[in-house]
Image (cartoon, rainbow, N blue to C red):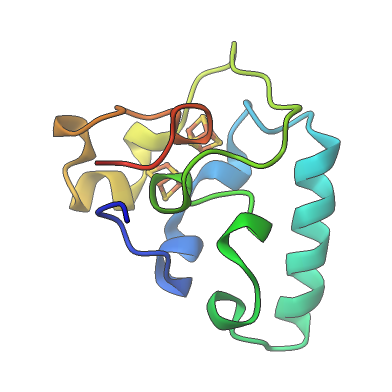
Length: 104
Ligand code: SF4
Ligand code: SF4
């Protein structure tokens, strides 16, 4: 268990959806579409789907299950409120949680 909780609140704050590392991933696009459909139906996504179904909050859930991410682009985590509030700059890994696993 990492130090960040997988909550709907953190899903909303997470910047992974705007990150260039994921921008070209068809796998991520498919997951996003599924989530948007669930949100349109007003479901509490944190209770209805598995963390691995959400292409974000990797600081909580660990490495991405999508394998088509492009890690040469820059991680957005340093700009994220979850990153700042939890002082993840002091932890490990320092961003790129989708590649390197959950924050410790
Ligand atoms: S720190 Fe990174 S992985 Fe964690 S919620 Fe923010 S943008 Fe998402
Ligand atoms: S963890 Fe960092 S690199 Fe990975 S998708 Fe989120 S913002 Fe981008």
